[in-house]
Length: 428
Image (cartoon, rainbow, N blue to C red; front, side):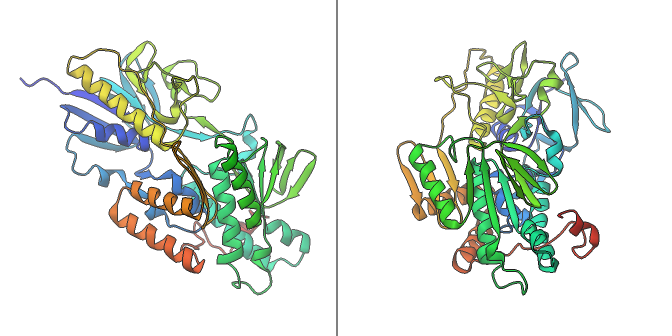
């Protein structure tokens, strides 16, 4: 009788989970990948969907399609509700528990509002395709509502866009929104002048892109201000409501507010019954396994692990890929009889952010770039890491078109009728 294969369950089809699944190719195992969405998302370009540069299909691919040639992988579209570490099963909504011999949790992170979860209804974050299309709809509907608004104060509030948090996501959103207003929508309306829209980027710290070198942060600040973005530093947000934001001793009336200030890990720690760190992440052993649960691995944004210098491994896509590969390789080694210690060593590829369509900042350690040269390097790097060849071509064509003409091809208002009263009311 043939012995049963080692069962590996991977929760999450993002960078970490997909990387783990791909690393297990050729191993004599059965893999089950569970995700509550049917697609793998290239998150670094999510802001371009939110600002009408790209369509959803250009940055996301069905997980089943990616793994279609892997007979050893079963993909389940399901929502995980818990993990029974004693029985070694994963509980899913409306389904039978999924048994495992090894478990890899790669469930990523969600928005963190620092104890003010009530702000989420007014200031959505940007983590999923649904977030991106919601924000895009909100942006475009704001201009449509402003075109119909006769009250100057209300019209100004509709044409004011606030981003909270000046990390890479906040910076990229601010640059893209100001260019959408000033270039793509110019001459599209008869009453309003979209180029007079206000884009305000609020950061509680003293600089934008806090993790970048000072000279790159300073360049980014200047580039944003040259574009027309109002950057407010050193003033924490203390209130967010349907009509605006309070920061420091100031209030801005705005109907569109986007949250880019913080993230919190998925509920993996709760599933496993372990104490999380302050951001909700699971503290893991050097090999990415969970203390006391050597068959359970946590990778990517869900894991808390330090680099040799004591700094935490950053919550970026490349770190998720590397940790996913590492967990898979540890499992493969154990199955081959090698139980030696295999500590995870993160190799930082560099920091990168774009500022509009003609400027970016890059720090690869051995070289630092800024301006239009950095933008081209940024673009080539992102196109290279896109999974599908067709998508690489489409994204390159979309960017070239925007670069040459300033026009964005994804300016569609979806998720409901744009002329009904309710959608307009929701942004007032």
